[in-house]
Image 1 (tube, rainbow, N blue to C red):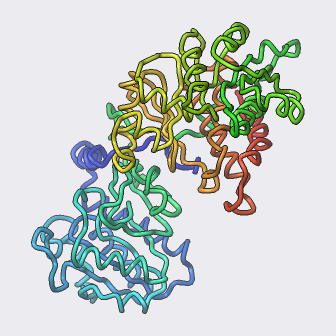
Image 2 (cartoon, rainbow, N blue to C red):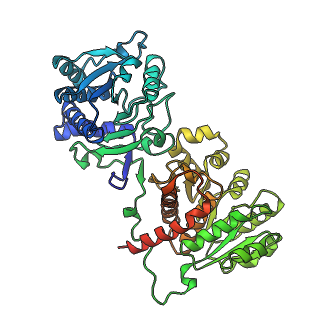
Image 3 (tube, one colour):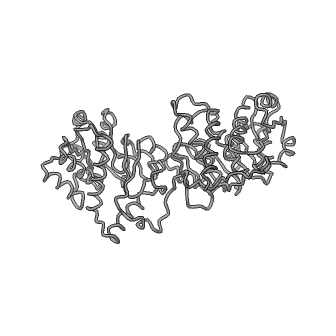
Length: 508
């Protein structure tokens, strides 16, 4: 997706950009609607070249107006077009208008009628007679859950067995947060206009947007002057320069010394995965402080990891001296052993990457630091904020901000469309790489190892976090080349090594 713009905007800012395009650049709403319809129709022909029968489902606002433009162009091209309006169906709620009654959308509907087209009441039967469905039902202004004929229309589109092409955003998806408003179109393809909508890239948005493409409609970038994007996509381009090629005379101390703390009995793999990932990400020396019951077995199977069995907090303190950075949490547990190591880590002045049970211990006794990176998944984030997982997922952008406000440092809110934010920074970074194959035991431990190694190599916490997230997610995509099902966390290690070196190679 690196061909897409980096900036992701909220709905209010994109609407303001529309208004500014009209008031300052003479691009009236009717001009932009015509451009949007033409761009959508061109993409329809490109992506569905064999489609001869098109159903365009139009709503009551400007999104519906875009749809009527598409319908006109498709009819002009000789395609069989059916324009459907749930608003014309019996039982349409009064709080939605019946058909466009004013402005550019009404003019587009009138133009469709003048071209000999009809607006038919929505029926699922019409969808069975088409090759592709154009979703022009609702755009970015939707805030309430869909009910009645509107919900029924989306259910019919989703179960039709036909590919759905969403104009600007899948209907029913909240443009800012990516949450589903009761129900949302599951599109195969989405074409977003003027400004990319942040909700397409996180939470449930990635489930519903399909392939996301963009057309700026010729609107000058200046319409967003002075506007702070809700988020920015992490791309290989904006990661360049974070890791430079190594000097020929470099030694392992120059590459950073990492201490990984964790691995209670039965959880040795978590600490080992984090340690191996740290090595694969360029750390010069990695030490594991783990439970004595399995220290010897780790040494035997991965001799590069300098492994110490530590019985308690007193035994780990000498290991802090030589470390540049600490990763604490993988397999740590919340018992007496884990709590002791956690408290010992907090007493140091070393930058920390905090994961897994260390996050749960932090949630129980909150405190704030400026030099750590917290890496919660939604469940851990919910405990950190004392809310439900549903609350976290309902607005992930608000959640990541709330965590850094309460705990300081940098937060990596994992999940579909992982978010990275630093305390005091209005910019949120979003990773649109990765796939469901990463939902496997140990995957988060690998991410912890990547980030702590980058910290040890001198990157600022925010840069270590965003580079680490991108490398981890991209490694997951490479590991899923033969399928997302059945990926092991250890499958990520080789592509992590390759991707880190890609970044180094393209440092300039």
